[in-house]
Length: 94
Image 1: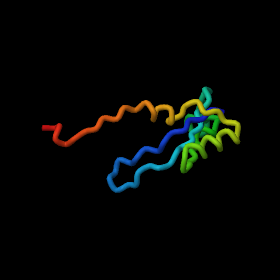
Image 2: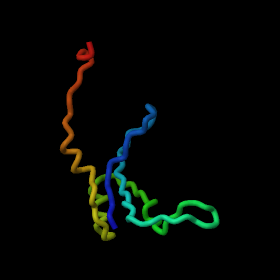
Image 3: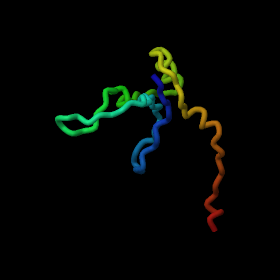
Image 4: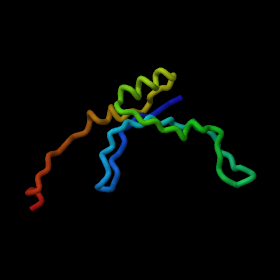
């Protein structure tokens, strides 16, 4: 089973608290979905793709994944080091 670990995004509303949690999300397997004959809904046999677990820090998420035999294939930690931050000043707008 493959998983993705990423940092929770901050909500678009101003009154919300910043996202401090790390999300562990199962990447769904490539499989065919089928149409349920009774309700005519698209369905799948894989319920694992609905799972999203929240952790306080990155290390505990990785530790949990390794203890369950999951493989981390997409991690947000790798992308955090490559971000180029530009200092902006309000006076530069004029």
